[in-house]
Length: 210
Image (cartoon, rainbow, N blue to C red; front, side, top):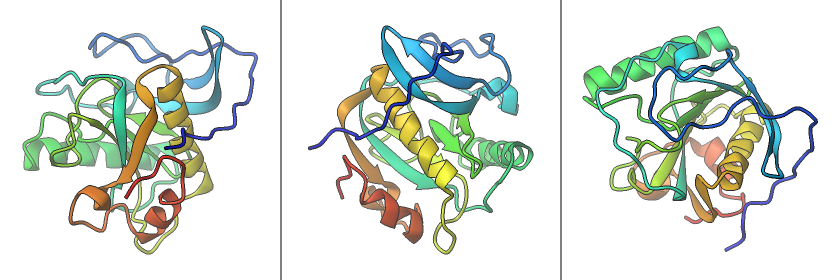
């Protein structure tokens, strides 16, 4: 299986976001930091990431560590309205977290990361905490949700670019195996998720396996 193909752009500024290896909820970080990076000679493409503290996440009921590097990534959509700016995305994030915790009875928001249509990446459970997004796969697969309903709408180029950059970030920092398998929710469960239009894009990406 081919490894993920990414185009790496070199930037002069050092990374101001690194995923912590401990589980501290309130590690210091500036609001919506931009990842520009240089870590042990590895270079990353730029993307904006908003940490849990910045979007007002509730504390999780429980955290189950996940073995890294992960061998699989599963792409979802949230099946809600697309959010085009941080204020509307934050409102949705809080709504999703309440739904997952209060209605579904889960420990936290189910996804590891979520991505708005403006390309901003929102931290869910992060790289090292087991998610709740695909039954029978949560302990081996990271869940990335693109915010919107892509059964009829199309994902933005900014959101698709951020998905690829998150994958690159995971591989280069050893949170994600270089030969990871890429799937969508419909490949592992009887669902339309992540919507026909997003699925038709993801199925043509490197590492995809139905």
